[in-house]
Image 1 (tube, helix red, strand yellow):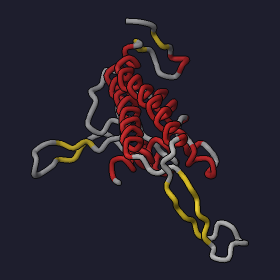
Image 2 (cartoon, helix red, strand yellow):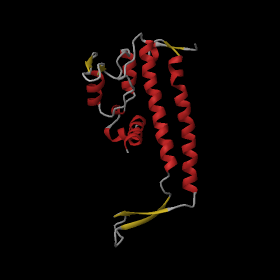
Image 3 (cartoon, one colour):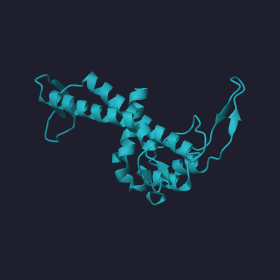
Image 4 (cartoon, helix red, strand yellow):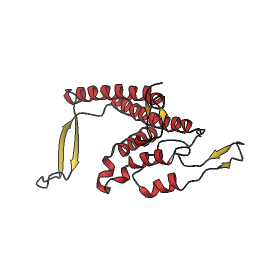
Length: 191
C-alpha cells in the first residue's frame, strides 16, 4: 500500500492511500492551474483590450477619471478558476473523510476540511460542536450537526487548526491560501 506516515508527523499512523484518494482531484487541479496560467498569458498578450475608467485615481486630473486600456474579462478563465477551486476543496474534503475511516469511524455528511480566518468561528463550528444529530421531521433522517472534523484524532485536528488563516496577523489573513480558496470557491458557487 505504500509508505506509512508516523504519529510524529501529526496525522497518526495510516497508509498512503489516504492521500492517494485525493490525488486525482489534485492532479486535475494542477492541470487546470497550467491552463489558467497559459490562458492568462494569452489574454495579457492579446490585442483585444477594453477601456475602463477609475474615479479619483490621480489627484491632479481635473475630471477625476483615469482611462485604462486593459485586457478584458474572459469567461473561460472564470470557468477554469472555479473548477480548480472545486477540485482542491473536494480533495481536502476527501482527505478528511479518509482520515475518519482510517480512525475506525464512519464519515458523515458534515465532514469537510474547514477553512477559517476567524479563531472564534473555528472554535464555535469545529471545537465546540459535539456529536449527535437532529431528527429531520419531514425527511425521516438524522442530520448530523457535529464538527466537520468529527472522527479525527486530536493530533489530526491540531494539524488542520495550525494550517488555518486565523493563525496569521489580521492584515495577512486575506492573502492566506485557504482564505483565497474559500473566497474563489464561494464566488464560483454563488455569483
